[in-house]
Image 1: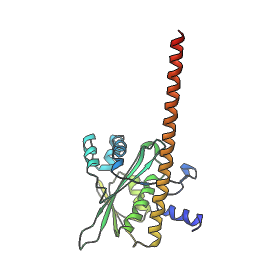
Image 2: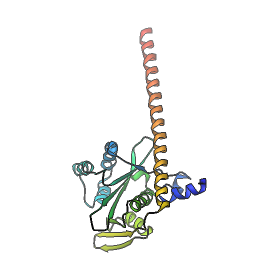
Image 3: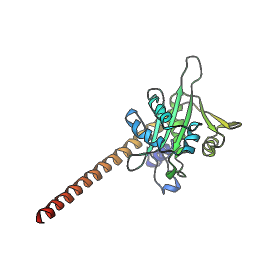
Image 4: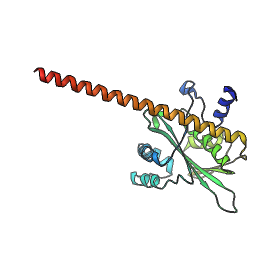
Length: 230
């Protein structure tokens, strides 16, 4: 596979360039229970209005904590975008429903930190969720949002979803094509890229923490020498 072909595959799953990031790929990580503290910190940092748009009601800190505790990592898919400090600045929740004798479907929800909006993170995570849903044999993907949540509705429309508004609430649904070799390879490449990116950020943070400790020790030694001299 050529580098150009690999880039095209990555771009199909949300790992793509955005003009705001100046030719930087967006790594979208698959999250697990070990990321619960970071997920909770991200959601608790949302403003009251952002919580209202994300959950459809003015979620309190306690309600957010219960939501985090109720995440089912065995059934659902949780995605995140990390900054250099390994803080989650974007989170997506793809809830999957598989019932015997009935078509499988998924429901998508997303939140992005205010200071990184405008970079297309929400849309990229939706594309990432679409690829997984296809590979999980899900035929229908839903987005349930408040009608005033223009960014979420825009994401759905751009993806080709059918959007139906009912007063203060809007529901969008998108029929997904069947999985194929391309969708499976795309998801594999996206996961590998995200893991490598996360490991690099983790190593960098570890190094800078170590350097900060060394500098603090040196300052302590200098203070000790100064006090001894006096």
